[in-house]
Length: 143
Image 1 (cartoon, rainbow, N blue to C red):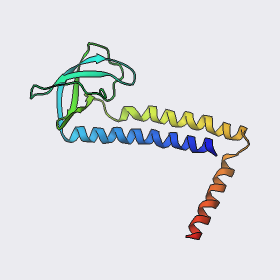
Image 2 (cartoon, rainbow, N blue to C red):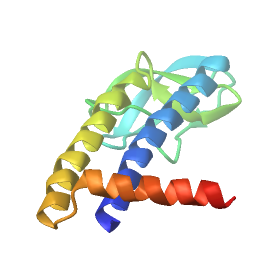
Image 3 (tube, helix red, strand yellow):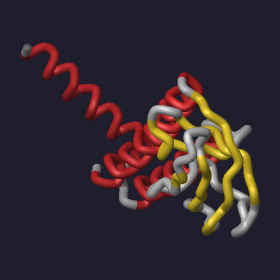
Image 4 (cartoon, rainbow, N blue to C red):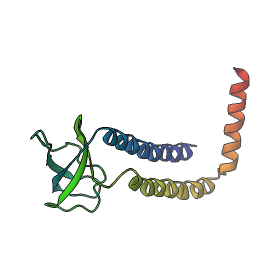
């Protein structure tokens, strides 16, 4: 049962990550400023950028830039940021759709490992679901 809970939790977290990315995109789009910036460090999962907003302030968001794939150190890029919170910044032209395929991949791999593991451990997923349904029905009947 622990394997099933872990796989479900991983799946929920993957979906929540995509939803959070969409929320950030919506925040940026509702109060968007654009400018060019320079990539200070580049990684697959996190890249740091520095940019100057029209008011002359220099920003280097602590959490980096959203959607940082395929950036190189020293590269000049266009960024879109939330004017009321310039630390919320993304690479121009990218949005939450780039998070969908990785999230789906995590979910598919998680369940591709979980289902055979459940069978090997002697717990058929259909039996686990039937047990969960019976418990749910009893809980609803008791209340």
